[in-house]
Every structure is written in structure tokens, then in C-alpha cells.
Length: 299
Length: 253
Ligand SMILES: Nc1ncnc2c1ncn2[C@@H]1O[C@H](COP(=O)(O)OP(=O)(O)OP(=O)(O)O)[C@@H](O)[C@H]1O
Ligand SMILES: [Mg+2]
Image (cartoon, rainbow over the protein chains, first blue to last red):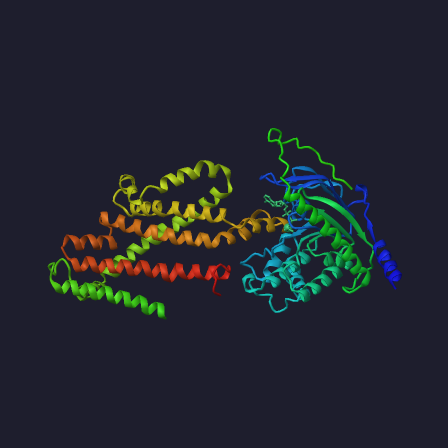
């Protein structure tokens, strides 16, 4: 009995392998990325990440470890203080039509209705007028907001706003979808629906998705890869490939073994961050603010 | 309903107090007429057409000057908030001139335009255009940076961004600025009209003073209050409330 369990645990963890993706095969390539905010907080330090086309990458890590910052750098909203981000081997300069960022907040235009928000975005992306309304209504149905097409954002609940925002992002249909905890504010039931919706669209369209989440289970339900980050300074500590077939079942035994394993890794990262924060913070020499000592992170 | 009842109560109390003081006879009834006398004077001026004519002339002037102020002030505010040259060089000038009470422009206006409508229009425009420009600039600068970030990730650029995102996002603030500009313009107008033969409400006040007709002076003052409040309440308040409700800026919906 015990041996059988142990065997299954081993086998499920064999489905979780370190990822090795070369920059030459990558759709998105992040190399030696550093970012320091104006207030001297080192949000990212020496981050390397290569994402293949069509991958679903989940960024996982404790609060404040720089997940949003990394995502914003991919979107072109944050200009990193060091290193490079390129897409299809082209260095990025600001936001582009190949990418779409979904913010941690719904960020709808408050004066436009749900449908208006979507058609406005479609217009900006050059979708012909005749198509816009139909496409908007299709996605409104998909996120289960049928009947709220003409509602204004402030008339919706937080979760409904987030779904409207998801509909807007999906309707625009970008090649790369960057999502910052899009389902964090949803109730468990809606959350599962939205995960299924996102997954089915991802399976059908082969988009490249980078998805930030706090939730280990969500990361393993959705991701083909899970990237674990640690705070202070923000960095990548694990990069694991998830070899489980899609669609995955929430109660799947192998999946839940993985959740436990990755959850353990996450707690380790959090624990280490905690003890480190109890020690006095290392002070940096103010005389050389530009040349900062390069810390090579351990394995 | 309760609000209206409270307001009416306060007005009634004030009128009652006025009646009481007038009856005590401390001042001569020529200097402090009773409310009824003032009301009669008001009715008389309305029926013989003097008040209506004067109000029409004043409002016509105000409307022309105000439309000019809006047409100049809103674009000026947009330019100041969007273009560095305007922000660095023009904004300090605008702020400086804004410190000047509008009636101070009158002597200059009289020298430039003579005793014409143009002089009053000039004073009114100078009294409101700068306030409108500053309020517009303020509300464009105050636009939620999140919205501009969303716009840029969605690829909203150029004119579509200026008129589809920035302007609507700033609109509630701009309307508040327009309301403020309106009250500046109203004040500037009456100050200007008081000082020379203008045929407007201001002149009606001056004539009342010259004839020592206190009921007329008071009646015109009452008319000015009523017109000013009506425009503010009926027009601007309604637009502002509607807008803020649609934008989701009010708590109760
Ligand atoms: N605009 C900013 N200016 C200064 N510091 C910032 C800014 N945004 C984030 N930071 C800092 O950078 C670090 C990383 O922030 P980031 O928002 O990327 O974290 P996160 O991993 O997304 O956290 P969460 O899971 O809570 O959203 C934090 O320590 C934060 O204090
Ligand atoms: Mg974040």
C-alpha cells in the first residue's frame, strides 16, 4: 500500500521536470533582466526566462516577488533598468499589437458599457466595424455575462467586471496574452468556469500565455510550465515543465501530488524570505548607484 | 422632498425676519422696504417688460462671452496638459493672470473697445477663460493612469486616444470647471454692467440707486439670485449629476 503510494508519488513527480528552453527556440526571451524602481526597490534581479510559442506559463510566487513587474516588462509597460526582453527575436519597445496585458484590476473604461468596452478595443485593433458587435457579443456570452451587454462597469460586481475584462482581452485575440491574477477575485465556481474557458480557448488557438497567480492549484491546472519566483530581490528559483495531459481534472491524484510538492517549494521560498527579512537589510553603497554588484543566484 | 421642505423653511424664516425688522421701524421704509413692497416692485418690473428685457440682454451677452470662453479655455487647457511648451511657458502666465480679479480688465477694455458691448464681453471672457483652462488641465492631469495604461496595451493611440479615452475620462472634471467658469462669468458680467450704460441687469441696479428706489434695487438683486441659481441648478447640476452617475463616480446609483 505504502509502496504503491510512494511509487505513484514518484511517477507523478516525474511528470514535473526542470524546463530547458534555449533562447533560439523561444517566442519570448528574457535575458539577464534587472529592474529597480525609482525608490531603490530591486523588483527583479538577473531573470532569465524563455517561453516557446504556444506555451502556457504560470508565474508563481509570494506577494512582492516581482511577478507583476516581470509581466509589465513583457508587455512593454515597464522599461527594465537592465537586460533585455525580445519577442520573436526582436527587442521590444513598449506595448505592441502582438501582446495584450490584462491587469490585476478589471480596468474597464467606466463610461462605456460592457459591449462598448469590447467594441472600442476591437476598433483600436483595426477590426472592421461590421464584425465588432457580433464578436463582442460572442465573448460576452462565453464569460457568462449574457444580459449585461449594456450594463455600465459600476453596475457590475467585482467578479463580473473581471469577466468583462477577460472577454475584452480574449476578443482582441492577441498572439501573446499576459495575465496578472485575472481570477483572483472570483468565487470558486466562476473561477473554475473561467479557467475552463481560458484553457479551451488556449487549446483551440495555440496562444502563448503568461499567467501570474498566487494559487498553486490554478497554476498546475492551467500551466504547461510553472515558474517559481522568490522575493527580495525578485528572481526565478524554479522553472518546471508540467507533463500532464489537458484538460486536467481538479481532483486528479497526480495533479494534487504536484500541488503538494510545488506548494512545499513555495512555502520554502516564503520561509526563506521571511527569515531573511528579519536580518538587517544589506545596505548598498550609495556612491555607485549604477554599477551594482552582480549576485549570481544559486541553483 | 424633505430637502426642498427644509430649504423653503429657511427662506421663509429669512423673509419673516426681514418683515419683522422692517416693521420695527428702526430704518426708514425707504431704506428698508418690506418684503411685499419688493415683491410688488419685482412684479411691476416683470409686467412692464423692463426686467425681462434687461435679463434677456444680460443673458445674451453672457451666453456669447461664455461660449467664447469655453471655445478658448478647453482647448487651451488640453494644450497645457499635453504639450510641454504650453506647460512650461504658457501655464505660468495663465496662472498669473488668473490672480487678477476680472473687473480689473475693465479700464483696459474701455480704452480698447470704447463704451461698447465688446468691452463687457472682453471682461467676461477674461474672467472665465483662464479658470476653465486651469480646470480642464487639472482634470486631464488627474486622469487615472490605469486607464492610459489599458489604452496603450489595447493599442488605442492618436486621436482615438485623445477623444475616446482622455477626454471622456476627464469629462466630469471638465464639466465642474465649466460650471465654475459660468459663475465667474456671471459675476464678471454684472460687475461690468454696473459700471456703465449697458441696458442689462447691472444697469437696472444702477438706475434704481440713482432714483433712490430701494425696492427696485432689492427686486433686481432677487432676480439676479434667482436667475443665477436657476442656471446653476437646472443646467449644470443636472448635467454634472447625470455624468457622474454614468461614470460611476457617485456612491448611490
Ligand atoms: N511602481 C512601483 N514603484 C516602486 N516600487 C514598486 C512599484 N511597483 C512595485 N514595486 C515594488 O516592487 C516589488 C515587486 O512588486 P510586484 O508588483 O512586481 O510584485 P508581485 O509579485 O506582483 O506581488 P503581488 O503578488 O502582491 O501582486 C515589491 O517589493 C513592490 O514594493
Ligand atoms: Mg502583482
